Length: 179
Ligand code: FES
Image (cartoon, rainbow, N blue to C red; front, top):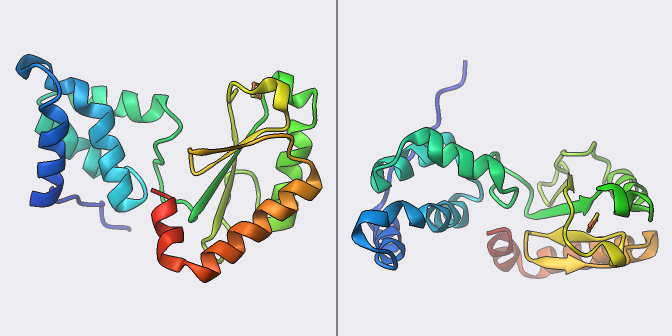
């Protein structure tokens, strides 16, 4: 049986939380919840249940309200992912223009099921909801930041090769890129 994950709020993290809370009126510090979740994800690479509980306690809000935020926004990772999170849109407009094919191509190339992470820990491939760029389909998002459009099999291959090369050349920067 695995031990439940624990999370200890460090002084440095608490200081970062405090800077976010200071942006809001004193009686509305819960408004900093998304920023606090992002800070934890930067530090851990994901948002653990224990860290959500710590944020709830810090902001004086019910834990369930923090869980609701984490589960609503797919930029929050609820489990450990690869260094590169590849989210491919498979909503209907993209489905009509090879979105599913792009997802399948990536999964085949990297040898993972949808939602899976490569054994070297480099890539996690996931489907995503509409990314707001339907006309550019197939579209995908890398690490919640970099939008990639018109992802033909050739462009997908080039992207994967470029990310592998980047990770090999800059292992520390690649780790930071996940966050
Ligand atoms: S449906 Fe894919 S970006 Fe809108």
